[in-house]
Every structure is written in structure tokens, then in C-alpha cells.
Image 1 (cartoon, rainbow over the protein chains, first blue to last red):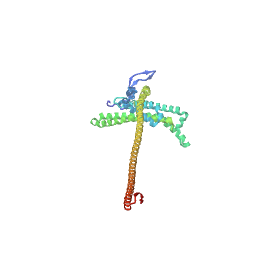
Image 2: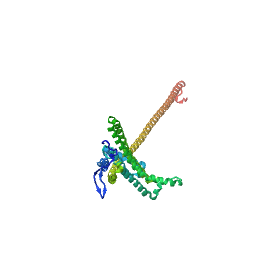
Image 3: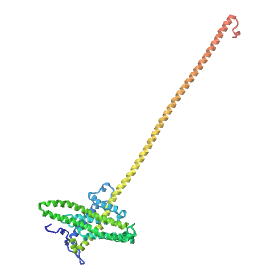
Length: 250
Length: 152
């Protein structure tokens, strides 16, 4: 980064191909480019190792290759996550949670590549994902329970005179779910990348002593990779919990 | 903050997010995940079938061992029976033999005794006759009475 550049410059969206569709600006930007890379990578990573898999019963064909083991790891991770939080009924929602987790995870991880772009550091992207989840679980709740879904806001076992106080609180907390879900991911990505950039600025500013922030950046990069994974995990597990709430109410 | 300032790119971001998310979701749902699941199921089935096969084989082996042990005890019982029988038989035979021999000996002793007694009687009677004879001779010679008239 050139001297004097804002640490927030890395979040700037730059159009690559200007596209105008029915008066809407849907330019292919650096954000869209990294979405493309993420999508392509996930699809290749999880599909290609299993393309050759044929149906045989000989033992040697059942030994997974390295790539298959890696893909299975992701598959089983989400599988057990869903099984632990939702249970058997959760199997139906596996593709959704898997897609969400992998999209966010690799979006975050590719964002750690220098000069790349982190599309999950944009509130509009995370808010869209969170709103998608929110609308999905709300619709799911109404489909499963009909009007009874409103009983979700009534905590069982509470004295009646507490209800006027607690039902609004429950409704507010329910409605704030997409906001907390999206802001958590967005803020983590924003803060991590900004912090890295600020300390990167110190490296050149301090001259020889720049070695100290450099060491800090190296450690922080490790932490950021952990956070990249952790935030994807949090997003996925909260989605699972919301699905569980919609299916079982309490 | 570009996230909130570059409002003009909101629609573009939403559009491409939608496009790629839908592509990713669709391909994963209909192609990738079923493939992975099929692969995992295939392996699970293979392992499970082998486990059940193994259980079967273990059961078979156990039944064979049971069979073998039953046969072994049976054979052992038979062997001890045969040994006992043989012992009994041998004992009985030897006892019989001893008994028979004893009887035979007893018989022979008896016979011998009888014969001896008989011989003794004969000898005595013979001796008697001879004595009678000689006595008769002696008397007839002394008394000149004919032998036939002497009755001792």
C-alpha cells in the first residue's frame, strides 16, 4: 500500500466490466470477481474428487483419495453440525447450511490473500445473506406451524402479567437476528483487515523497528485465518439454531 | 467507509451475490452433495456388509467349535466307556477263569479223593478177600475141612 492511503481503501469496490441492465448498474466488480473465484473453487474442490468415483465393490475403489478426504471433512463437519443442533429433521436443510458455510468460509479465506478482495467485509453482502436466512426460517416456521408459530414469542411457564413486557422483547430479539448475524460477520472482517492494514502501515513508517509490527502482522494473520473460519462457523451454527427454532419453536 | 459510501454498487453486489449463491446452491444440491453422499454411503455399506459378514463367520466358527467340543466330549465319554467295559470284561473274565480253575481243581481234588477212597476200599476188600482166602486155606489145612464149607 502506498503511503498515506486509507486502511479502508482495500474495501473499495472497483468495477471491472460495466454492465447496465434495465437501468440497474450490475457491473462486474472486484467483489463479483472474488465471488466467482470462491464459487468456482468450492465447486471444483468438492465435485472434482468425486467425478471419477464409480460404483464398484472392490476394496481398492473405496479408499478415498487425498482430495476426497479433504472434501469429506467439510461434508462431515456440516453434517454433524446440523445433526447436533437440529437432529434428524435437519438433513433437508443440509445443502443450504453447507452452501452458506462454504461460501462465507472461502470468501473469508480468499480475503486473506494479499491484494484480494473480501466480499464478506461488505455489510450489504452479509445483510443479504442474513436476511435470506431470516426470511427462510420465518417462512419455514409458518409453513410448519401456521399461526401457531406466533407462540414462539411466548415463553412457556411465565406468569401472564409478564407477557406484555416479554413478548415485545422476544419480537425485537427475533427481528434483530438478521442484523446481529450480518453485522457480526461484516464487523469481524472489517476490523481484522483494517487492523492488518494499519499495522502494515507502521512497518514502513518505523523503518528498522518496523520488524516489530511485522511480527505482529504475521501473528495477526494467523488469528485472522482463525476468525475467517470461526465467523463462517458462527454463521452456519446460528443458521442451524434458527432452523431448529423454526422446526421445534421452543 | 466504502461499505456505506459506495451505495451505487449495492445492486451490483446483491445481483452477483444472488447469481453466485444460487449457482453454488443449485450445483451443490443437485450434483456435488449427492455424489459425496453416495460415495460415503457406498463405503458405509461396504463396511457394514463386511461387519455383518464377519459376525456371521464368527457365529459359524463358534458353532463349529461347539460342535467340535461336543464331539470331543462324546468321544472322550465313549473312550472311557470302552476302557471301563474292557476293564470290567477283563476283570470278569479273570474272575471267571479263577473260579473255573478253582472249580476244576476242586473237582479234580474230589475226583482224586473219590478215586483214592475207592482204591482204598478195593484194596481193603482185596486185602480182606486175600486174608479170607489165606485164613480159609489156613483153616482148611489145619482143620481139613473143605474150603467150601468154611464160612468166616
